[in-house]
Structures are given as C-alpha cells and as structure tokens.
Length: 474
Figure 1 (cartoon, rainbow, N blue to C red):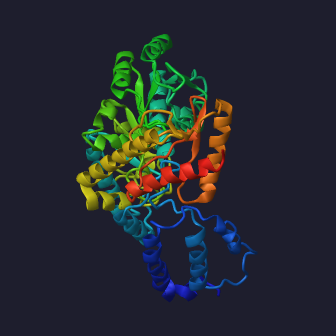
Figure 2: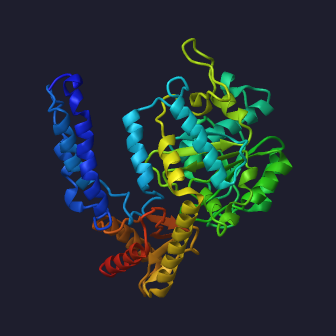
Figure 3: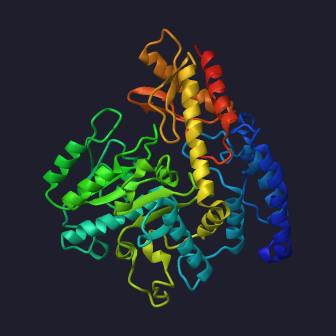
C-alpha cells in the first residue's frame, strides 16, 4: 500500500470497524480484569521494522484494535481506583469521536469558529456548575497540571508587575524569588507548574500543623507578614491521599488581608461545589484569583482535558499573549484566540466532549454522580471499619478512602512492607486496581472513586480482594 489517498474510500469503513468493536468492548468492562497479566507481551506484537510498503488502512486498524482492546488497562471501567481517573460518559465518548472526525484547529477563531464558540459555551457552563462568577476568564487545558501552569503564570505576571516588570516580555532576570506559600497538601503538579515557570519547584514554603499536612493558618499568616510584599498562596481542594481540603475561605481572608494572589488547585475537589451536601468544602473558591481543575477526572470526559479560570480575565492575555505575527488574526471578545489565553498553540477541540456531557446530564446528573460517589466512599469506610484485618488511616474524604491491611501481631515496619507487597499483588491480580501511598509514615491503599460506572458491588469486591490477597501474604 502506498499513498493514503489510495485508501480514501475506506475511511468510513475503518471507523465502522472501531464502532462495531465498541459495543462488545464497552459491555465487557463490568467483567474484565482491569489489567490482564496474560496480555503483558501483547504490545510486542505491534513492534518490528517500519514497513516499506504499508499494509493498508483496514489491516493496520484491525491489528491495533485486536491488540489494544486486550492489552489496554481498562481504566474506563468501574474498578479502576488507582489514580484519580474518571471514565468517559457515553455522551463525552461519542463527542470525542466527533472531535477526531472533525479534527478542528481550536486555538484560532478563523481556523474554527465552531471550536471557539463551543469552548466559550463550555467554559461558561463550567463556571455555572461550580458557582464561579460569569466574569471570570477561562481556558481549556490538557490537564490540571497545565491548568496550574496557567493560573500560576497569571499570578507570576501579576507579581512581577507589582515589582514594575513585564515578565512576559522581559523574563525573571533581576527579580527576587516569587514567594509561594501553601499547606502540606500542596500537590506535585503545583510544584511542577512552578518549575516550568522558572520559579522553582522547591520554592513553596509549607505551613502545616501536623504530619498529615493540614494548614497552620497562624503560621501561614506570620509567613505572609514576613514577606512584606506581594506573594502567592496555593490552597488545595482535594488532597490525594485522603480527599481532605484546605480551608479555602480562610485562605481567601488571608489573601485579601495581605494583598496576596490566591490560587486554588481543585484538580478533583472543585467538584464538591456541585452538591449542596459537599459544597462547604470549597466555600470561598469564588474569591480566588485563579482556579485549576481536571475535566478527565470527575467530569468523566476522555483524556486529556483540564481547565483554568482567573478572576480578572485580562490576566490570561497578559501572561500568554504574544506579539502578533503578520499571518495570525487579532482576536476580540467574540472572536477569541484561545492560543493567546493559555500555554498551548496547537489545541485539540476538547470543548466538544465537555459540551456534550454537560448538555446530556446537566447539573442534576453531576450532582447525583458526586453524591453517589461520596456515598460509596462512606460505604468503603464502613466496610473497612467492620473488617477485623483492615484499618482506616484517615477519616473518609470526599471520594478517597485511605486504609491498610492490618492483621494482628505485626509491627509497623512489617506492616509497611506487607502493604507495599499487597499493592503490587493487587495490581498484578487485575480484578481491581488501587495503588499504594505513604501517609503519616504508614503504607496503605488510597482508592479514589470518580468513575461514573462504579457501584456498590465494585466497592465490595475491592474490599474482598484486598482481604483475600492480604491473608495470603501473612
């Protein structure tokens, strides 16, 4: 096979091959191993020298489909608890296929007025969903990490401006280190964002009142007072080990009192705002200067998808706008060039799945899902408390439960080694997927519940498998 034009009439047939496989694959997710150890070498079948003459569209797609549907980690299924990873709702998945079909260039409005307008609508709907002011500026990003880059880049531009420097034009040379303060809950993605921005990943000063990382507000205030000038506060909505939250309203009070920029990393925790039951956890987020979150977590849209909002919309253009090249269009409030509002210049039209899932299920649907997942976390915590060989390491959070296997008669060192091995065996077993962590010096599991498919039977199976594997290790 030679030129792709030779297969032009097979494009729709190739898509149909995938569509025909989709039904059986999706129907199997409830029963499949999350990761089948028997398929570990299957991807090697895709290896080999680059063909001189290709096999053609249908042969290539068929081979990839055969290997991938078996060898993939089935993270879109109901028993993937390893990271904070959602699935993909039916509406979002279908819209993502449409995104690939249309292949829109979404960063410049003349390239795709459709993608630009849908992103604008999706951002407005997300602000409504989370109770953020409509006046906030926003942009879709590939992830919460890039959303943190976006919000903290706006903060850096604001901070440098307070020192009389346009950091976008002139860089950081000659400026002091930007003061960044947070609790012990600060996530590596915020540190990575600061690393990317040239501020240094270890520049964050942590103020914690215990080894869990809970914020020490008095010490944080003293730290702000000692800075004596503009600073950046990072509040964390949803700590990954326990699902706990910084007191965002109190952080906002400090930011207002000391003239600091407040950035909220709400990767998954921002979704607490969706339910009246849990909204108190993010009280004050509407007062933040910037907010970052993931869509491919609790919104349950396909990877990769995140978003960032800033209170003063102009800050995004100041941080990311460039000198206009002759061939680039100049945007305005209606004809938005999202390239100038975030770190990407080549952007997929990731707004389409977001629009589709919000249109399909609305505020009520997402409230129901968040509340169901919170109920499942409480169920898991109860099952842990009831089991004689399991121990909770922290109270259940919004959707995360941190616990360990603990048979009688073992010291802490042995328990840590046992639980580390249990985590490895759990992943190798494949029936459920949950990773280990170290929390307050103790090794345990921290399953996160964010997949729209997950139900009570999946939680019960998780507990059963953990106890089964654990008992075989003692």
